[in-house]
Image (cartoon, rainbow, N blue to C red):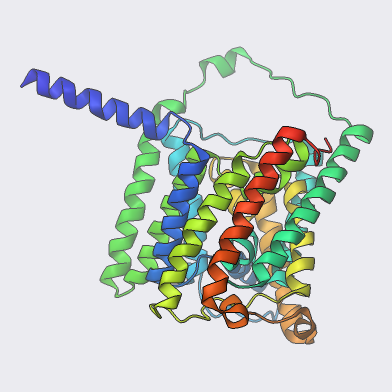
Length: 396
């Protein structure tokens, strides 16, 4: 009996170490994110993030601007808002379970970059009909042509954003931060001792929330929150970041995140093809991204913003969840700007000239869509690997 208990303890310790102490490989994270994105698609609708930011921005503007129209849904009843809450909470719980949660202040110039980056990302997301998730990852995965234009825009924007960061390093060098340790700091309470308890409680609260929603006949909303928490956990443990897929080829030449994102997209796209081709979900579901002007220009603006902020829509959520105060500022300005620009686009009629959603199989048929889609993803990997070896595209 004692040997069984000791063996059980060893297994639990090993599992805990694998989940919360060791960094997860990016390619595994990509596979898991694709699976969860497909489950969200089957459960409700294609995965998106920017719409949740807009819902938050709508409420912020409603409370600070007299006479501003009240949003149609509250954040806890809005599907995309709940998914975002889940990503934030899942990442926070993961950070605490890993004893990595900590409020991380940044120099004033970093806050300025985070705020301005959030403004650019909010603007770009409004123009493109989504962010790096909804208008790039999901758009390509559900065969919306706007996703490819967004992909090109993100690449160009990342290149410009990296150039701006190089200029900053040249003309506005920052002094390295000096860590000051005092006697009082050494005697202060060790927060890491109880982080795991709070992290576990957050996970339990997420499960409890699902049952509460279910008891009120809103199981779909509870499931979206729970799926979001799992995505937040995966992204935190693997440091999965779409920014790296567009920044690293120009910065260091590293192709790891390109391979992970492309692999994830191949899995997501193949699963999406089954769902749509078999009419499990409507074929045109989620295909609204403005091709090509809105997606391209929006992606370019978004790409510059994510480089300045140091995070995209998804990584802003999970990195805020682990305590990055700069990204918290980005989150607020992203939300408010996206809401304001989207409201203006809807009212001005300017939205009409940005383009319309185009479903790839409607243009070239399902038979050609699948090989073309896979060929594009494999070409992205090949180009990234070639660049990693030759550094032809590295500008850093």
